[in-house]
Image 1 (tube, rainbow, N blue to C red):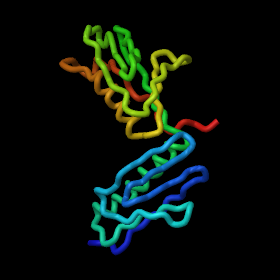
Image 2: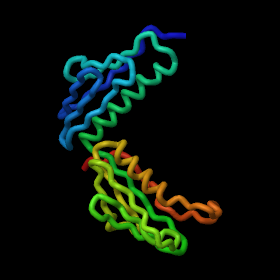
Image 3: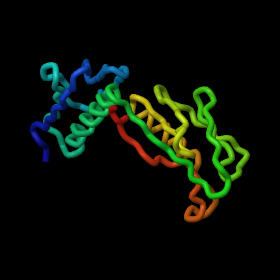
Length: 186
């Protein structure tokens, strides 16, 4: 059954500027600027005054209705990204061979995983910063404005340390996300 109109509004906080032109959303804030294209979804995106964004879908079935909330979440994440930013913390897990992780230019190099000689390399995506935690042993922090780039970089690092041809219940070695979220405000 089709619903005649489904709409949601997003509140824009102070210090954030949002531009919408033919379903391309640009969000500017104190940390930078993010752009995202929503042209693949049939919906109305427009500004209601200075402080609100309205997302409308007319005569939508169930799948199209779910897109309303999804687009609102993406825009919310963009607003949080340009005001506070996102941070993902990853921990090294190993039982015998210590994992060695270094940054070389724009790539993260993982050595000595399960004692292997092979060097695993993961490219840092655009706008992602790599920091080795000083206070916590075997922890790295990846931060940036775009949640998609930060989380995708973490996923690539985690997947590069998949254990193959061994019992996964026994070999739990790898680099895993231990904490994620927006950078806390001071």
